[in-house]
Length: 240
Image 1 (cartoon, rainbow, N blue to C red):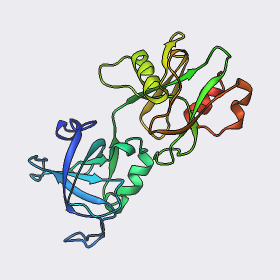
Image 2 (image 1 turned 90 degrees about the vertical axis):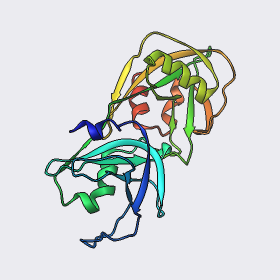
Image 3 (image 1 turned 120 degrees about the horizontal axis):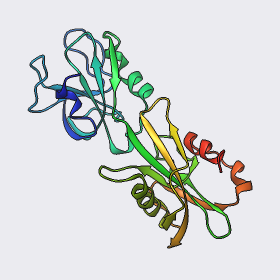
């Protein structure tokens, strides 16, 4: 794939919508099932601006700003498409993306290209041996109302360990001390994400909630089986 599209992966981009959701293609007549537009002041190999699908918004837009999470690379055409989403949908799977753009991409041979993302989660155990679990907000795109551990995406120029400490603080309010290196890697089958798991103990602070969770509990190892967890956390629990 040419660098003209790849350089936008992971970037925040502004999209001007010229074919809003519900509108018809001016030549072929099919209906746009998502908002579709272009990146202003750019040029693709076909001489036009770089096109983009804006997913996750179910009303017509005139413009949108979001993160480019993928590229639809047409293997029989020279017109790649950006896939742009709001911040809360960056975990959208390949399957979900391809389903959303099929109304147009079904006429082309194509593949989806994404960056490898690294995430962490942290199993925090207190002096009683209890484990902190947190219930995901109903507003979360992936697995709302499921239980998980504090964690999140590794930022640029950040080590796995630094990310684990930061995410634990942001999501639980706790300052932690890691107990060794990561003990598990979970690889998503439908998303280009690796999740690294750490054990830790709290140093200071009191457990609190961020906007990503609605509830937390300190539970014993024996009680872990009483809750419904996200897929990556299920694997981690089997190794505790």
